Length: 360
Ligand SMILES: *Cc1c(COP(=O)(O)O)cnc(C)c1O
Image (tube, rainbow, N blue to C red; front, side, top):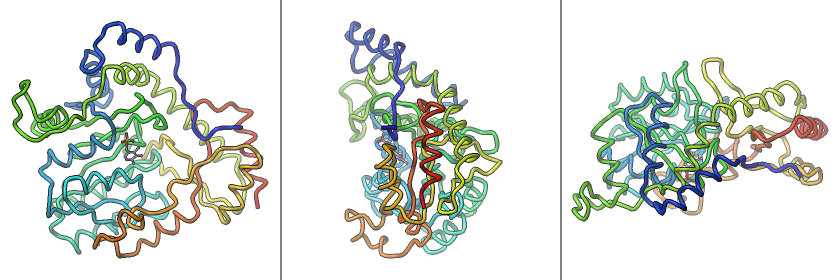
């Protein structure tokens, strides 16, 4: 069996975790700050605030921006549910703009239309889906013209670049996730990056129960803190991010070069971007036949995502979820992700290519 996702954790992570356990500093601790410092330095960003997850990072960013009940936030219908859930947590309403058929990211044309239909929208959350940066120039231009704050969901794109600049530094603030399936992990965990001192300060207070000084609560905050144990893992993983991404990119190139099958459409990586292949997601003609074929051959896969967000049972009764998003809906019906994780061997890659090329 070749698994779809395989974690790579070594002695380095083990030793750091044991150190934390022996120190007794399980919750707050020096590794949290060290992880924040290293992560922001890697991005050449001014502020980094660790959180308990990518979801909570998104939530506090929106709250720190002052987004709440009655506000509208535009985003993609084709993402993990957390992107849109974070908008709902604040009391705001998500507006979904369709995706681009080539990159699967938010379509600038659809964004322009959404802004026209909802001129009062306050922000747009861009998702760099599967590790491919979104079309930031076009999106930022529309946003600037319409007073829309650009926020980035970088949960799938650690180290990805747009025009030579790392994602997470292309908007007002950005959220990362360190869930085990992501390009690097801390177990559970997240991070907020921003260059804005006011947002950074508010985020830091919000994740820590609304307090700047212990037991004095300026606002109703949350316990969204990262633990020292998780930070210890994240710190070691961050050192390996460049190597992991290099391997993911090489694996993707192997597929690009060797999967030749008229029933399969491979993902695209525009030359002005560095795609870090959180997923290698294909469009296929008969997905049920392919999944049966992969099951029979012991190859793991994932469906990202089988149902667009506005069609989810939890969403479909919202007033803004009654439209259609034909490009996203089409992708949901025919997408499949094959293993691209850094632990794949050449013989596993060769097997996967053979199996993919034999499917009709
Ligand atoms: C994983 C993910 C999140 C949420 O991150 P968690 O750490 O699991 O809360 C948000 N957005 C996207 C696009 C994701 O892939």
